Image 1 (tube, one colour):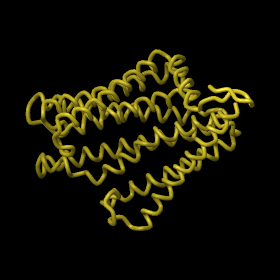
Image 2: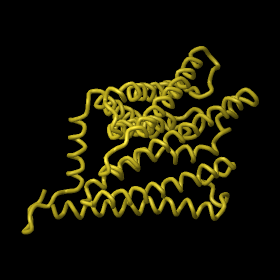
Image 3: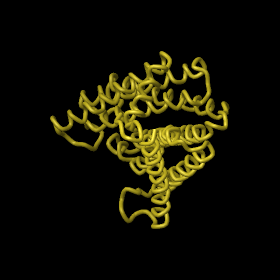
Image 4: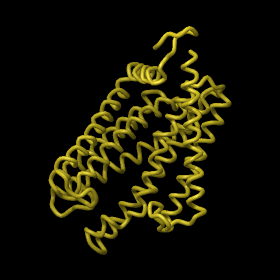
Length: 312
């Protein structure tokens, strides 16, 4: 904090970090454990990026350091986001504990299974060539089922527990975040089902590439639970009224959902949006419109946070 003639000037980053630290200190035992597990998973993912840089090897394919890096980062960040969002759905700590605890355990199992198989130098998905490979594959599949069940339970809790009017923006963000996460998990289940079918009808090698067209849709749908609740949290530091905060979140959520819907529909028709020129121009324009709307609301919100902190 700096002092000026007009009074103290607070650093927005320092203020936000202080609130995050306070939120961790005030969290329950289970939530703090989930945050710590999330941190470990993220560090594990970062470690494998370092391993890739040092040892090299293929980045793509069924056996690569990308998989433990990607899954560690993805599950770690998602666990953090789900834990934070679950505390804002007005459900008691006791009622959400089973779902949140199972979700944390399943995330850990998924990352560990993929990591161990990467260090063994064998594929982690669809690999049942040996008894030990079958154990890891079944553990990952069971963990995936637990993840879907726990997220569905938390989503239902978010629907059934209305929040006060002054926190309506948070409710919208959390609901959209959980809905998009459920969609991402369903797409992931479809990818596994396609891979399993391909493994039995074609080959194990073909199974790893059978559902790549769904990867962008799965990735985009995963981001809602990360971005939207974070945006809602930032709006609480703007000084805006509750109705204005709600309008901003509705606009940002609409932009995100529009972009996600376009990518998912394209995937359903076998179109890969990451390949330039393959998607219809109108669809690309709609996706960009949604993305720019979300980014725009984020920029406006961050600017409002900084402006308020400078005058606090």
